[in-house]
Image 1 (spheres, helix red, strand yellow):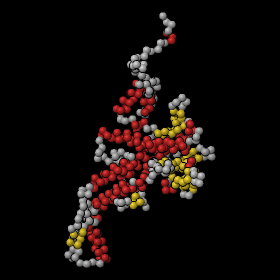
Image 2: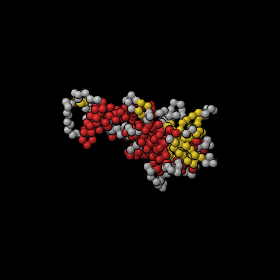
Image 3: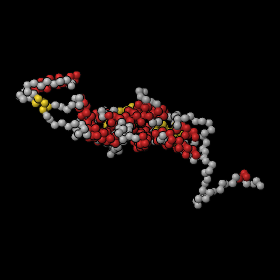
Image 4: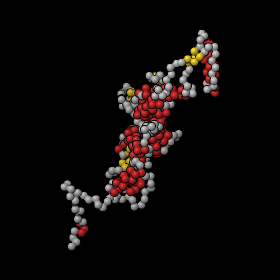
Length: 382
């Protein structure tokens, strides 16, 4: 049922999704993680890496983790649970040779981490016990190193207030923005008579009859009762403040959560970069290390590793990218084809060599230019 809050509403992960800001944050993070390229790499002798397209796990994570789900859908499902509940689980299915052949998401309510008599971690899925090697577990902030903190439970007061504000607005406008009325009746009525009077009043003044004239009889009259309007209670300001608090809890920029009151053209790009570095990079690292630990054997980990490609999210706008590529190419640590690859362009012939500006010269410790070494082939030429 969810824990009750001071605002008078109960909050569960599913009811929290009814708050637009919560939904926007969960949707933004899960959509981002599902769209970032995830590849299996092989370390090259002498340094560097190459994509291990010939390995079975590359196809599993790149195309389809199981017969019913694409890679993007699997990752989005897992990340949505991880973002909202701080935990996400998947069952690892292996064949007779111990090779991973399928990954299946597990509903959070069906699984629980546990420790056996030997002190080893295990998981229970509907009372059936599974070794930890069979469960891919993603977790957010954790205090015990296993279970992520219940995000909705920890932030239930902030989310509960947002739910209460949303319910207040819905009820307010369902009554045509008119506060409840008080009706004073001089004659005594039994509880049954009062109930029938209230029902007849609601029928005559709600729905399609709203805003029609009301006729009072029998000495009844409208009572003057204290009213508080939304402007006096700072309803809009309170709602915006709660939206910002929720975005802060999820580590999502306000612009991505649909909060645009303080958005400016010159700060949107910086917010996106901060979002990539602070929020997405952390989740990507959790994914990478969990996949390396659970899907690769100890021997394979010396050679293979999973990695998200965040270059596209961190490279900035067109002008910033152009300046970056120019500096990297002219200083000789990036080839022109490597720059083309980052821009999703095919390699071109003759652009795989490193180049450097001709006016670059080595200096000694005192700052004086170092003379180029003599060519041995020309040493005997008179």
